[in-house]
Structure formats: C-alpha cells, structure tokens
Image (cartoon, rainbow, N blue to C red; front, top):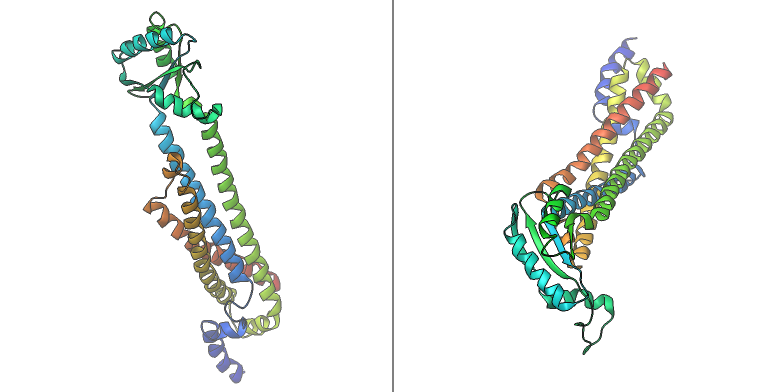
Length: 309
C-alpha cells in the first residue's frame, strides 16, 4: 500500500505533463486528425470569404441602384423619339424628388447594343428603333408609388415613355446571391459537423486503444476530469496545428480566386472585395475550430469514462 500511495502523486503529475505522451504516444502530425482539421478549416475559410464577398457586392450594388430610374422612349420614328426624349428630360429635371436626369448619348447606346446585334464595321444603326434612354437619380428609394408619379408627369409630354427602377433589373441577381450566401452558411455548418464527428471518432478510438492504461490510472486515484484533460490537450494541439495549416491554405486559395475575379473587370465583382474586418473574422475561424475540438473531445471522453466505471 505504501508503494501504491507513493506512486499515486507521480502518476497524477504525469497526467499533466509527460504522461500525456505515454497515454497518447502518437507523434504530432503523424495521424490523420490534424490534416482532417486542416482541410475543414481551409474549406470553411473559403466558404466564409465567399459569403462575405457576396454580401459586400450585393450591398454595394443595392446602394448604387437604390434611387436609380431608367426612362425609355420607345418609338419607331427617330424624330418623334428625340422630341419626346427632350420633353421628358425637361420635365424630369424639374420634377420633385429628382436629383439628376441625364440623357444617355446615342454613341453609348450604339456601343451597348452592337455586341448583341452582330454588326460589322460600316453597318448603319440609325435605322434600328433603339429607344432613347434617360438616367434618373431620385432622392431616396425608387418605390412603385414614386414611379407612378413620374409616369403621370410624363404622360402628356412623352406618351411613349417607359419607366423602370434599375434595382428591378438585378432582382434575380440579388436573389441568386442570397441563395449562394445561404449555401455558404450551410457548408460551414456541414464542415463544423464533420469536424465534430472526426474528433468524436478519434477520441473514442484513443480511449479504446488506451483502455487498460486508463483503468490502471483510475485505480491509482485519477479523476475523469484529469484524464479528459489529457485528451483535450492533445486534441487541442492537433487542432491548432491543423488550423494554422488550414488557415494558410484557405487564405492562399481566397487570394488566388480574388485575383482571377479581379481580371474580369466587372464593377460588381470589384465591389465584393474583403475589408480588414473580414480578414480578422477569417483569422478567428481556426480559433473557433480549436475551441470546438476541445469541447467535443472533453465531452466525448467524459461521457465514455462514465460508462467505463
């Protein structure tokens, strides 16, 4: 009994230090767990960055188009079309709530429709009934009620006018962006669930491998919390290593994708760039992953140890 009693303090001290390597002798990064966590963290970083970029792009586009209105003068007769466009422009510039009204130059209209018409050098676009366009900016949101007021104001001077809110053109795009954001959130949840499942399986496997050692330590007086702390610390170390590797891989992937999208030269894509607060949030993903792994390992080991008693 004296020998057993003298061995007990050494055993308990070992649980907080070198005993961890004896209880879990597997070398760091030699098993699959750190690499599984690295893959999950990298995918989570990419998904989160995509969701943040989509949100910024949608917010910027919505703000730009919030008070935008397009007036089309649809008439097959060029002279009548131009006359109504001039009259509509004069009315709009004095209409209440209108910040600005600008006629879109004809050469810009020709440049816009030329790729879609398949024209060649020397073709004459004057014979085509291209509507005259007026770009209008309102003070505030272009609501249906305000559009109705503009239609009534132009009914007498420009009966061929068609008035549309610019935001309505991109409504399907905004809905698609919203769906992609929800999809990214769902992927992040799935990655978290997969990480928890992997940690749960690894913890149970380690408990089964070292069951005899744990029973001996139990008989020497070690508590479930002390044993769980050993597994928790080991899993946290693996998660920290895997999280760092995953963060680096995810950031490199995000930067590569950002460079590819920037080459498109699209204004909406350019507005989806990440702010410094977004990068801070992405850097917090590995920390959240480590905390999740530690909590999962602790709860799994404690539950298994209670069943072993």
